[in-house]
Length: 178
Image 1 (cartoon, one colour):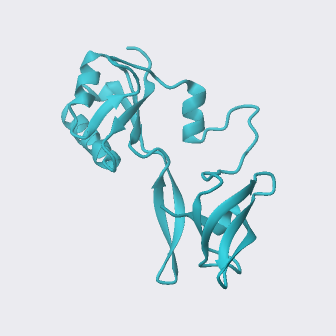
Image 2 (tube, one colour; image 1 turned 45 degrees about the vertical axis):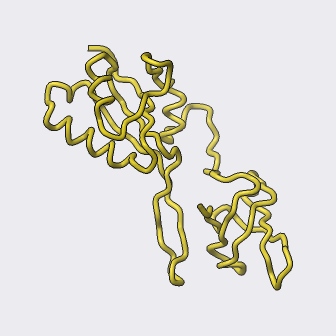
């Protein structure tokens, strides 16, 4: 048997979890296919929102509409996945899915490679709408004006007393708004 590789499967929007659960359920029934599959992964990270004055944790998908599947690709496993409701297509050319390289999958799964420096997770860009969740500007909404990766700080434009005011906050003091 050949080695399992990671493939990216495009799914219907907001159906990633349902597709993953369906694959796992069907693999329990199709025991002869079970050995062809490894892990199934939906990339997400935890964010915090303030709801009714309380800090609430929620999962936010890193790649909405995509799941990662570790599998041995052949015509039978390809058809098995393609027949799952909500599964659209594998990334790659039309009938030839392209596996992810080891370095790509390690970055996605958070595996540190030799020589890599630990870099803080940064899932935002200039212009993103945010809400301040900690500190003196807690509860204010605004947009990111400047990002300083080294200091792990942001300059955020918030409206204070009817005026747009730039304030400096740490990465961990904000959350992205949808």
